[in-house]
Image 1 (cartoon, rainbow, N blue to C red):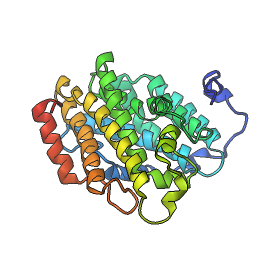
Image 2: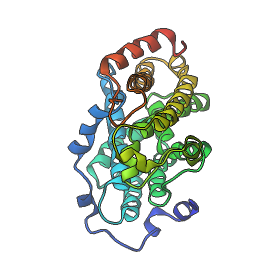
Image 3: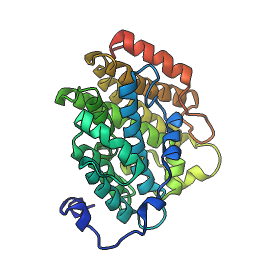
Image 4: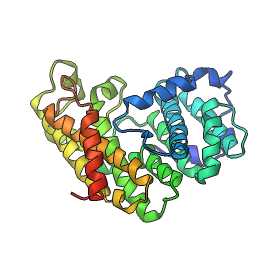
Length: 301
């Protein structure tokens, strides 16, 4: 996809169409924020101070709102994403329209969040409207640089820790978490007309997405998913030393994210890499235990 289509013009010039009351096409704030409990990792752990927790929930609301606009909203999603980017610009000027953008505006000011970082999430969802498959793992990682890595970078900004070396470690963690989520959602994505596993790997293992529609995951699919999960796990662990480089309370937050990834890997292993008939949801107890291990080890085994 030619991403210059989206980047070359200001958001308010990207479309001449106008969505009547575009806010009505989006879910309310409570419905968006309620999804936090279903994530693979604790979004804003209760052990964190109130200030960072508020900022993390504001960010989560924005991230999920953008995902809804790109994945589930009725009508012309590209137009809706353009409107979201326009309102994000308003948030940087202190005049947003949407409630979740109003909640985000104080976080933007307090944490010095670069607008470019938050726009990348919108660009990822624009890409989703046109590009539904990725030929190689490198292409998938490039997509994760838009769809996942800005999340971790934003978290580091919340804690004043967004140095380039720390962002690089965060990127590994976030890409790994995104790939694990793609493995969990492989059937759901297929039914939505998308495949977030590299086509080169599908061919290598002789896998066709249509095979997932009937019964348990076939053995060759489990082999493919095992390969993806193991590779994501290696990437996750390569970024895990970030935990030991952060001060409190940032260390608590990031340990929870990495722990959720480790617990997801454990759940896949226990389910024999079958996300259709097996439960690949990370157990809370396992996530908590991994968080303690990470805090004690600083992210190293």
